[in-house]
Amino acid sequence: MAKRKKRRSTSTLRRRKKAQERKRKLKAFVLAFSIMIVILLAAGSLTVSFGQMSGYSMMPELSNGDVVLITKEQPKAFDLVYLKTPNKVNERSVRRVIGMPGDELYYQDDQLVVNGQGKTERYLNSRKADLVEGVLTPDFTLEKLTGKNKVPQGHYFVLGDNRQGATDSRDYHFVKQSEIIGVVAARVFPLDAIKTY
Image (cartoon, rainbow, N blue to C red; front, side, top):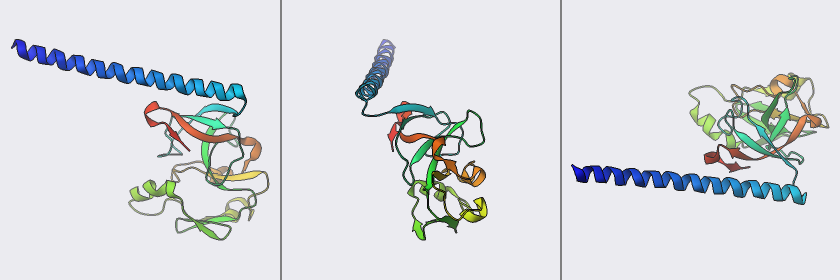
């Protein structure tokens, strides 16, 4: 009986030590990450800010409540951008740039076509694999949605990765360049899901 109690207490001690070690490593990582950000900001080599994902429009790439690191740079095609949601006061969101200024685009049979070329959207593979039936992105043309055949200069066309549940440019049309706060460079929280983009 005494041996069993001793084994249990030894096992419990090991678990506690492992948990303490994980906490220590996590604190060290957060501290190192924070110091790196401060140094970059102080050096002026990078203008960054943080934002929080609200809602489920970017699942599975980002989840509700995820904290992202945002850099001030010009968006490129397929970048994740943090933006002021058009037609919503004080609302911020993350969406993916699908159409750049001057682009012609449409979807047909779940295939994105930009300027006459089919584009592969690897970031949608897991969502497409989960489909039981139908398509992830219903057919549309830019002209039918917005009345324009090209993305206007100074504007972007953005979509959520959760195409069946996202409010995006299919609803509010183009996003002005001035409404884009920055490009999402990384997910920094939750800490067990840190990822750079």
